[in-house]
Length: 461
Image 1 (cartoon, rainbow, N blue to C red):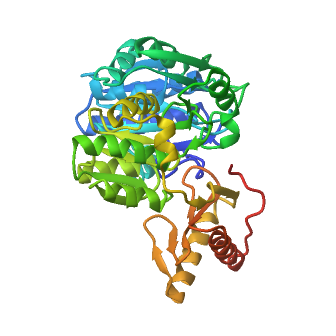
Image 2 (tube, rainbow, N blue to C red; image 1 turned 180 degrees about the vertical axis):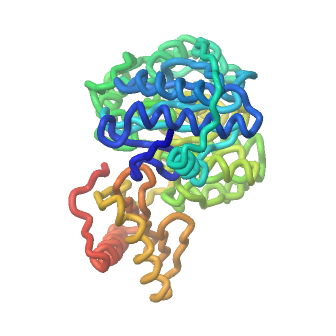
């Protein structure tokens, strides 16, 4: 028996597709067979599974478990919940040798996918390509595994506040009808202070707003709540609870790199000189701030799996991405957990002796674009980046090619990279003046034009 995946679904750090177009239960079954075979060959016996609140998720989990079992591996399902709950289960359940979360993350309702962890390490890149090769050649072990369920939600929520050292404050929580809702309902009961929640009921059709907290338009309800109730700050989550968005008491967005700046100050008090990792989209102000606080800033590639791997390599206690993935190895497990990040934001106020609003207000003002995303054909997006890098190299520009092209100029910097999860290119620019920013954006447009593209309709903020 063999299986061919749609080539667009096997991404760099997860598997993602459109239900009944590029992704089906047959794909889920094949993923189960391949992953189970690799687990068995590494001496493992059991895989934890979980799923988000999308309509298609239970069907995909059933097929995935069938695939795991048919390759002789047992499955333990933790049911519906945020992706970090599945990561937690993989970390603490003695029987689990790996984990697979079914989730479409922040994509539209008709998308779904798989995030995987293999014996405590991220499973991505060559690992995912290997699943495709194994399926195409039918290189699967056969056997008979069993499956059972375990309810881990209460244990997970208790762990989020286990060593909480913060005082009570007044916080708004927007779950966006995503999988984090039920956990947040339990979490706020364990925290001191006053808490106000929005859209905690899981609904895979996302009736109130799309659960992507990196797009400012999706924070409108949270801003209204914080303003009406005069709250200290507000937090929001993506569809599977591994990305956090936040606003301060004045309704100002606290972007991913700004959040990381707050967390870094708190963590570096406890671990002086530590390496703090951020992705290539983060502000220069963040890297400068980490240095100022006595830490070692490290710029790395965008992508949760790539960041986790780099943390393991460097022993970093804290990392983050512009997209709101925050990774605490400090007092936690090193995976991206937006609920835990929310708890640590409450705690940071106490540790630093300043409100979140004050911390946000004291940040160095930079003039920058949000992420500007624009459609480009899936088959063309990486080629365009290579063309840009070649031209920049020929021109003698100062380029960091860690992930795409990040170009430093006297005005500031601009970035152009290909998304690993969507058929888009992502651009970002940051300068000290508006005139400088305009010049940087002109440079981006010139590079795009040279590759026959233009920015067109933004899919960003």
